[in-house]
Image 1 (cartoon, rainbow, N blue to C red):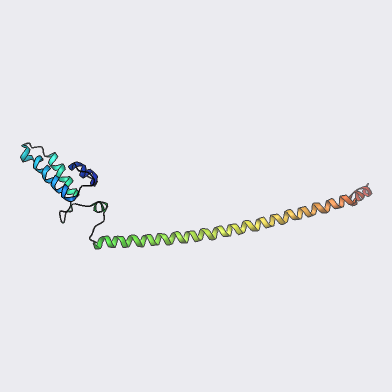
Image 2 (cartoon, rainbow, N blue to C red):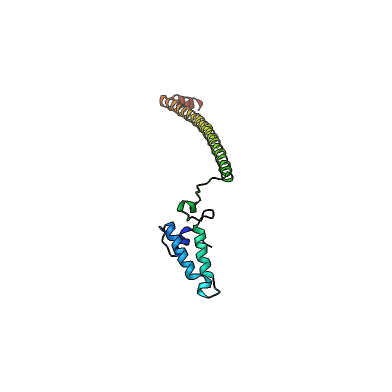
Length: 156
Protein backbone atom coordinates (compact mmCIF):
# COMPACT_ATOMS: atom_id res chain seq x y z
CA UNK A 1 0.00 0.00 0.00
CA UNK A 2 1.33 3.41 -0.96
CA UNK A 3 1.50 5.93 1.87
CA UNK A 4 3.30 8.97 0.49
CA UNK A 5 3.38 11.04 -2.69
CA UNK A 6 7.10 10.42 -3.03
CA UNK A 7 6.56 6.66 -2.92
CA UNK A 8 3.84 6.86 -5.60
CA UNK A 9 6.05 9.00 -7.86
CA UNK A 10 8.93 6.56 -7.43
CA UNK A 11 6.58 3.71 -8.43
CA UNK A 12 5.87 5.55 -11.68
CA UNK A 13 9.55 6.38 -12.16
CA UNK A 14 9.15 10.12 -11.68
CA UNK A 15 10.90 12.70 -9.55
CA UNK A 16 9.31 14.76 -6.79
CA UNK A 17 8.87 17.79 -9.06
CA UNK A 18 6.73 15.96 -11.67
CA UNK A 19 3.85 17.94 -13.12
CA UNK A 20 0.30 16.60 -13.38
CA UNK A 21 0.65 16.29 -17.15
CA UNK A 22 3.87 14.27 -16.80
CA UNK A 23 2.24 11.96 -14.27
CA UNK A 24 -0.73 11.36 -16.55
CA UNK A 25 1.45 10.69 -19.61
CA UNK A 26 3.77 8.29 -17.77
CA UNK A 27 0.75 6.46 -16.33
CA UNK A 28 -0.77 5.97 -19.78
CA UNK A 29 2.52 4.68 -21.22
CA UNK A 30 3.11 2.27 -18.33
CA UNK A 31 -0.44 0.92 -18.46
CA UNK A 32 -0.05 0.24 -22.18
CA UNK A 33 3.20 -1.65 -21.53
CA UNK A 34 2.24 -3.55 -18.37
CA UNK A 35 -1.42 -4.47 -18.94
CA UNK A 36 -1.94 -8.25 -18.57
CA UNK A 37 -3.66 -8.45 -21.97
CA UNK A 38 -0.64 -6.81 -23.65
CA UNK A 39 1.99 -8.87 -21.83
CA UNK A 40 0.07 -12.11 -22.29
CA UNK A 41 0.64 -13.23 -18.71
CA UNK A 42 -1.81 -13.68 -15.88
CA UNK A 43 0.46 -11.82 -13.45
CA UNK A 44 -1.00 -8.34 -12.99
CA UNK A 45 1.11 -7.16 -10.03
CA UNK A 46 3.05 -4.52 -11.99
CA UNK A 47 -0.15 -3.21 -13.55
CA UNK A 48 -1.86 -3.10 -10.14
CA UNK A 49 1.06 -1.21 -8.58
CA UNK A 50 1.02 1.40 -11.36
CA UNK A 51 -2.74 1.83 -11.06
CA UNK A 52 -2.54 2.12 -7.28
CA UNK A 53 0.20 4.77 -7.52
CA UNK A 54 -1.81 6.78 -10.05
CA UNK A 55 -4.99 6.55 -7.97
CA UNK A 56 -3.04 7.70 -4.93
CA UNK A 57 -1.84 10.73 -6.87
CA UNK A 58 -5.26 11.51 -8.32
CA UNK A 59 -8.23 13.14 -6.68
CA UNK A 60 -11.22 10.79 -6.79
CA UNK A 61 -13.69 13.57 -7.69
CA UNK A 62 -12.04 15.22 -10.67
CA UNK A 63 -9.29 12.74 -11.57
CA UNK A 64 -6.81 15.60 -11.18
CA UNK A 65 -3.33 14.96 -9.88
CA UNK A 66 -2.86 15.97 -6.25
CA UNK A 67 -0.44 18.64 -5.18
CA UNK A 68 1.75 18.45 -2.08
CA UNK A 69 -0.79 20.39 -0.03
CA UNK A 70 -3.50 17.86 -0.89
CA UNK A 71 -1.35 15.00 0.34
CA UNK A 72 -0.83 16.82 3.64
CA UNK A 73 -4.58 17.19 3.98
CA UNK A 74 -5.55 20.65 2.81
CA UNK A 75 -8.50 20.69 0.47
CA UNK A 76 -10.16 23.44 -1.46
CA UNK A 77 -13.55 22.25 -0.26
CA UNK A 78 -14.79 22.55 3.30
CA UNK A 79 -17.31 20.09 4.60
CA UNK A 80 -19.46 20.66 7.65
CA UNK A 81 -18.15 17.61 9.49
CA UNK A 82 -14.58 18.87 9.47
CA UNK A 83 -15.77 22.34 10.45
CA UNK A 84 -17.63 20.85 13.40
CA UNK A 85 -14.57 18.81 14.33
CA UNK A 86 -12.43 21.91 14.10
CA UNK A 87 -14.87 23.88 16.26
CA UNK A 88 -14.87 21.09 18.86
CA UNK A 89 -11.08 21.05 18.79
CA UNK A 90 -10.95 24.82 19.25
CA UNK A 91 -13.36 24.59 22.18
CA UNK A 92 -11.28 21.88 23.87
CA UNK A 93 -8.10 23.84 23.26
CA UNK A 94 -9.64 26.98 24.76
CA UNK A 95 -10.83 25.05 27.83
CA UNK A 96 -7.39 23.49 28.28
CA UNK A 97 -5.75 26.91 27.99
CA UNK A 98 -8.10 28.37 30.60
CA UNK A 99 -7.49 25.40 32.91
CA UNK A 100 -3.72 25.81 32.60
CA UNK A 101 -4.06 29.55 33.32
CA UNK A 102 -6.07 28.82 36.49
CA UNK A 103 -3.56 26.18 37.59
CA UNK A 104 -0.74 28.66 37.02
CA UNK A 105 -2.52 31.35 39.07
CA UNK A 106 -3.08 28.85 41.89
CA UNK A 107 0.58 27.84 41.83
CA UNK A 108 1.58 31.51 41.99
CA UNK A 109 -0.69 32.05 45.00
CA UNK A 110 0.69 28.94 46.73
CA UNK A 111 4.24 30.07 46.05
CA UNK A 112 3.52 33.57 47.36
CA UNK A 113 1.98 32.13 50.55
CA UNK A 114 4.96 29.80 51.04
CA UNK A 115 7.37 32.68 50.44
CA UNK A 116 5.59 34.87 52.99
CA UNK A 117 5.65 32.02 55.52
CA UNK A 118 9.38 31.51 55.00
CA UNK A 119 9.98 35.25 55.31
CA UNK A 120 8.08 35.33 58.64
CA UNK A 121 10.04 32.33 59.93
CA UNK A 122 13.30 33.96 58.86
CA UNK A 123 12.34 37.20 60.61
CA UNK A 124 11.53 35.32 63.85
CA UNK A 125 14.81 33.41 63.64
CA UNK A 126 16.78 36.61 63.08
CA UNK A 127 15.03 38.23 66.06
CA UNK A 128 15.97 35.21 68.20
CA UNK A 129 19.57 35.41 67.01
CA UNK A 130 19.65 39.15 67.79
CA UNK A 131 18.25 38.45 71.27
CA UNK A 132 20.96 35.83 71.88
CA UNK A 133 23.62 38.28 70.69
CA UNK A 134 22.30 40.98 73.03
CA UNK A 135 22.26 38.54 75.94
CA UNK A 136 25.87 37.51 75.23
CA UNK A 137 26.91 41.15 74.95
CA UNK A 138 25.31 41.92 78.32
CA UNK A 139 26.98 38.87 79.82
CA UNK A 140 30.35 39.96 78.41
CA UNK A 141 29.91 43.44 79.86
CA UNK A 142 29.05 41.97 83.25
CA UNK A 143 32.13 39.78 83.18
CA UNK A 144 34.25 42.70 81.98
CA UNK A 145 33.14 44.83 84.95
CA UNK A 146 33.76 41.98 87.34
CA UNK A 147 30.25 42.04 88.75
CA UNK A 148 29.63 38.34 88.42
CA UNK A 149 33.03 37.45 89.84
CA UNK A 150 32.26 39.40 93.00
CA UNK A 151 29.06 37.55 93.49
CA UNK A 152 30.91 34.26 93.09
CA UNK A 153 33.50 35.37 95.73
CA UNK A 154 30.85 36.35 98.25
CA UNK A 155 29.26 32.96 98.02
CA UNK A 156 32.42 31.27 99.14
